[in-house]
Amino acid sequence: MTEAQQRLADVRAAIKDILEKGQSVRKDGRELRRADLGSLRALEAQYVRDVAAEQLARRGARNRISYVKI
Image 1 (spheres, helix red, strand yellow):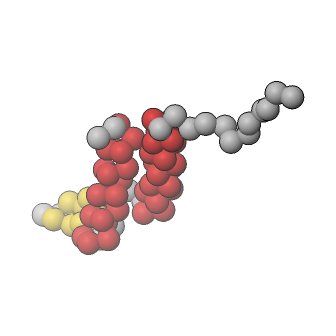
Image 2 (cartoon, rainbow, N blue to C red):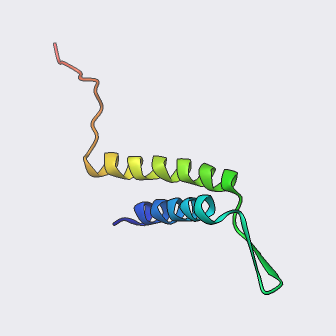
Image 3 (cartoon, rainbow, N blue to C red):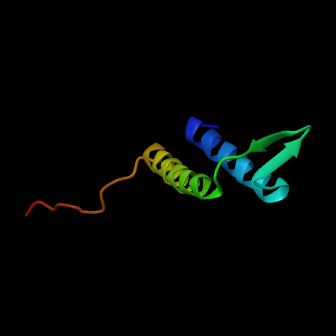
């Protein structure tokens, strides 16, 4: 797994955690406030683009324009 794929997986896990457990948790008089869901969604979109760019580069994307010598 590449670094970009790992970051994407981590962000998606954080989003899942917020959706399942809520934005903040109180325990023993302390409050834990997780990252903002909107910020995580923005990071997810960025990391999806990063992973796609990595995969495209790994496949050796080629320019679709062909120049023919006459």
